[in-house]
Image (cartoon, rainbow, N blue to C red; front, top):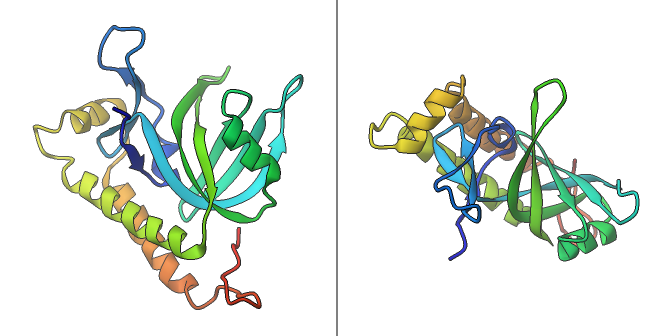
Length: 200
C-alpha cells in the first residue's frame, strides 16, 4: 500500500524539519512531521512553477521553484525521477503544476534544515485545479489544527514537543490563502481562449 499524499501549504511544509521512522527496519518508511500534527511520507501540492534550472554536473539534475499562496516549494529531480525530470526539462515557466512526491530534509553546515520534495510526478494543470487544491488544503489544515489538542493525537503531541510553532498560525495562513484567492479571482488575466494565465 502506498502512503496517502498529504495536502500541505508551503509555509507549513518548510517548517517541518523533523523526520522519523516508526520501526527499526531499515526499509521502514520515513515520515516528515507536520507542525499541525500529521505524519507525511508523501505530499501533494499545486502551484506555479516560476523557475527551473539544471544544476547537475555529470547528469541532468533539475531544480524547480514552485509557489503557492503561502510560500515556495523546491523540487529536485534527476536520473532516479526520470518522468519528473523530463517534465521539468520541457516546461516553460510560468505554469501551473500539480506535484506528488516525497519530503526530503538536508541539514546545512550552519545547522539549519532545508526541506524539499523529490517528485514522483509533475503534471501541468489549469487555474481551476490550483484553486480547488487551495480550498481542499485549507480545509485539511484547519482540520489538523482543530484536532491538535486531542490527547489521543500522538503526532500532535510529537509536534508540540518538536516544534516551537503555534498551530493556530497555520490556520491563519490557510484562511489568508483563501482570502487571497478570492481577491485574485477577478484580477486574473485571460488569453484569447479565455484561459487564466498563471501568474508567479
